[in-house]
Length: 284
Image 1: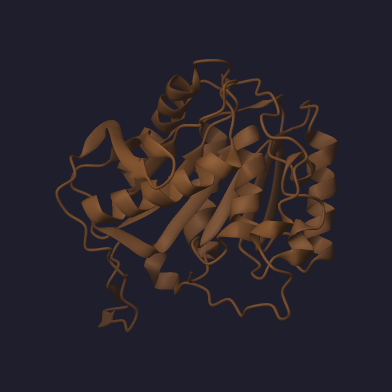
Image 2: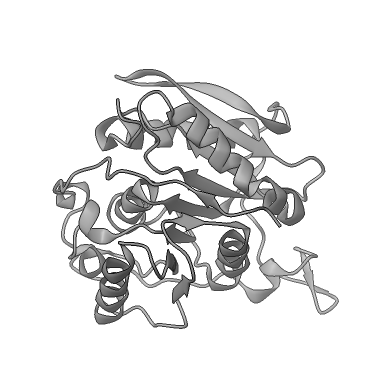
């Protein structure tokens, strides 16, 4: 098991209003759970009978497997890069986990994205999923939403064109500053894109805002992981209560998992997140 990786991430995004990313909902969408058999080893058969559910392949091809970096052209922004890992010999189409690194410091965003990608490789190989790790564009190694959110759109479009990815199983995870923006992406900007999401030491007050759960049009399954000695621990507890007040079910589509430790995560936390994604996922 890999040792804990500690990254003390600065709040790279300020208390910026994100409500413009989504209009106030008039009615909450009805979420449909992925069928239970989807999480079985044999995707297409359950109990000896062919099921009606089929994954939705992006139809992509031509991308190299293994680990590396790719570049994408982002309209109005320019060329951006991202780190990726695509396991060899995975069942197709593959699920996708988008991983958002914490604030890295000046000139360190690329290294942080690669390191975060690397933290997920063992799980990706075992679970047969692709990992996409965008690279933050801020001068201090943090996220700039007006640049990095459109870049994420381009990253996903490129990956889906280059690999056969399952469009019904796109997941999102972020650590610290990456978790802060993950809340905004999953709750307000792109709720129809993801089947579930998770944050490690990511909090609402840092970017998405306290009202984000009540404004969300979907109750996306959420896993919150935070160290008990992390300075953000009380904020994460408050977030838990906000989600419950907005209709999430603690122990159901809301998992709150504290652990002994600080501002960090490790293999145990990532294993728990991945293990919970598929069984609780909803259809995008």
